Amino acid sequence: MATRLFSLSLHVATLPTEDAADSHSKASLQNFVHDTIENKNYQSVTMPITNQNWTQRWKNMCLTEPGQTEVKKDIENQRAAEAWRAGSSGPLRRDEVNITKIEEAEYITGMAADWLELDSPDVWVRFDSELALKQELAHASYLGIQTVILPPPRNRAHVTDYARAVNSCLLGSGISPYTHLSIPSTHAPVISDADLNSTWEMWDTIRSMCDYNSRLSLTLDLTAPLPSSLHSLSRWAAEPARYIFLPASSFDFLKDMAQHRPSVILANTHASLHATGGPQAYPQYIRHLEKSSPFYKALETPGTVESFAQGYQDFLQAPLQPLMDNLQSSTYETFERDPVKYAKYEEVSSMVLCVAGAGRGGIVARCLSAMVRSGRKGHIYALEKNPNAYITLQERQEEWGDHVSVIFGDMRTTTLPEPADIVVSELLGSFGDNELSPECLDGAMRFLKPDGISIPSSYTAHLAPLSSSKLWNEVCNSSRERKHAETPYVVMFQAVNILSADSPCGGRIQEAWGFIHPRSDVLVDTQGLPMTNTHNVRAAHLTFHVPYAGILHGLAGYFEACLYGDIGLSIHPERQEFVSPNMLSWFPMFFPFKDPIYLPNNAELEVSMWRLTDKRKVWYEWSLLGARMD
Ligand SMILES: C[S@@+](CC[C@H](N)C(=O)[O-])C[C@H]1O[C@@H](n2cnc3c(N)ncnc32)[C@H](O)[C@@H]1O
Image: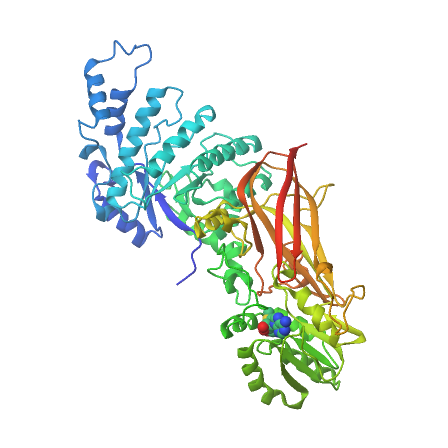
């Protein structure tokens, strides 16, 4: 089956008539939904939960006509309203709802009445709107409708009222804990950068007041024309956008959003706005856009990071600790599927080599083939401390013959039979030094002849401020205890946005520190081992410019390594395609902050990060020093 990034939803305001000439011949909803999904290329139907009858009854009960005072208002309506508020008149009636059966509801996304004003200046209207919304949500969750799109927030001055009501719906007992709520982003007629800012700020207030509830998502309404600079749109990529309302003007934006696999609600497809193609042309065109999006192309191309890493997007993983833990064979197998890393190592190897941390022999094999190719004589010592991987190495020894000696031991304590020209290692983590490459290589540098070299010869760690409510939620959900918020994670970024931009105060992504091997200025004991580990302590104080308001959830970490000469490895987002394109072995690092931090437009952000050590361990600390407006 073809990969689908977009899920398409057909928007209908009411159930279409079966026969255009006869407005009374309503199709059965079940048939209509079935036909839309089976024959029309959609995955769901989006429709209002209630209809005109309910609108009318609510308005009669709850709104005062202009010019009419509350006292004069029809006393019967007032009584009906009070009875409704007290719950004694029964909630919605059969002829006031569009969907009544569970079989009809399976493929439906519900829309709550969009005239409800949870943020009205009038406290009574707010109260009655909330009550009516809860009724609709209770009906939707009774039917098992998975997502309900709420009425949009319209009034900045009362956005906190809106947020409180939504939170009360999310936490209330009348609504199933499996019902998701989605907030439309805007209904403004024209969108400028400033509108987009204030829309985003409204959304940010609401989801913060709802405590980042994972059942709350965003419906991006692109009905209004977008600003020409797409830069300020990128922050929406870090938000849990579940639906997109789509005008034809926004197709480039849509291509970019494909990687988030949102549901696209297509509205007015029967309004004959476009002469050719008919209503079916719209979903077909979305599928065409999907296929031409860069993300889809990468996903369908074997060997790319996207196709290799399906299912890993935004999935938090604890960083590997190959020094302390012994890796599993399947982990090595995953490493060995990287077509780029090994080719890079092969380009740089020859003579007496020591592969320090040989694993299952992936790099040993490449060193051997480099020797054969260059016609050089040489010998390879394959050193490994994992007793299980050592068995695999012994097995491969037969295939390699006399060219390779396999040695079991820890590079910090083992000795080699002869000095080496080159020590080759791959002990790098997503942040370069986080798998203790510096500490291990300090031991392995003893193996080198005085002018011997290390591959890699150096590596650097890089940082950028990151916004991702999704990842931050995942961190919180992974444990209720906040202490986990202070642990770094390895994660393939998807719903994220780097908040910084290049500016005179510093780059968008900045280097924190680096390591070089071998290093001659370290004091060593009689064994050739460093006397302490203090030379591997590092500190970075970085200043980032943040052009657009956003929420900071943590820091993104990357590494770049120089193997030898101009051959390197990189996961730095701006450099990886030049240094080592399509390399699969490393996902970036995420250093979360305990609490999200709001940054206004044009903020300057000072970030500190330390690599610290004592006799037994190495750890990172990070903090935010200040965020100030220009
Ligand atoms: C990331 S794996 C690389 C394996 C292999 N070179 C490859 O690229 O396929 C790192 C290897 O170094 C080994 N290792 C880590 N620290 C070591 C140490 N102090 N002494 C010996 N081996 C070590 C681990 O057990 C693991 O097999």
